[in-house]
Amino acid sequence: MKRSAVVLVGGEATRAGGREKYFFALHGRTFLDRLIGVLSPVTDEVLLVARDEIQCARFASFPSVRCTVDRRRGLGPIGGLHAGALSASGDALFVVACDMPCVNPAVVTRLFSLLDDRDAVIPCWRPGMYEPLHAVYERSALQRYLEDHDDLSLRAMIRSLDCRFVPVDILRDLDPGLRTFTNINRVDDLAQLDADCC
Image (tube, rainbow, N blue to C red; front, side, top):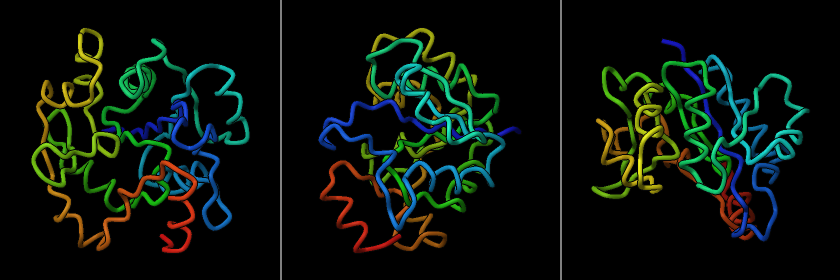
């Protein structure tokens, strides 16, 4: 089964003061550089999903990855998932937000291994508290849902798919602190992360 990593980079960065979070730096490397470095060895391709062609042009310095754009703009993560599912070449997709700089490749590999014949493998902290933007999806199932849906929420999508929910605690043998799920929304969060390290 071919595996793709889909990195959603098209957010408006409103909580980050308008700064593009994928270019935040941690220990001298941008979030995007860290994600590409982690995901390239465990997937067959890394695909970036941007807002538009202008934003795509910002990633010319990453020749090892492809960039595509939202087909339907202004839909948030659902729009990014739609574009990723249409453009990715893999049968299974690891989807991740660009503000997660500590993604653990062993965790990603395990999530892929748990897909089997399900539509998605989604980590969960407790019932109703999911990580849909650090999850694995079967590409054709995602395409079927996204081509004909009325609700733009990720929660509605999860309810519509045949998901395997994976308690995050079963991933602690690979990532004891579960740092893989760390996400950065504000510059202040970045300062704290830099102090804590990952």
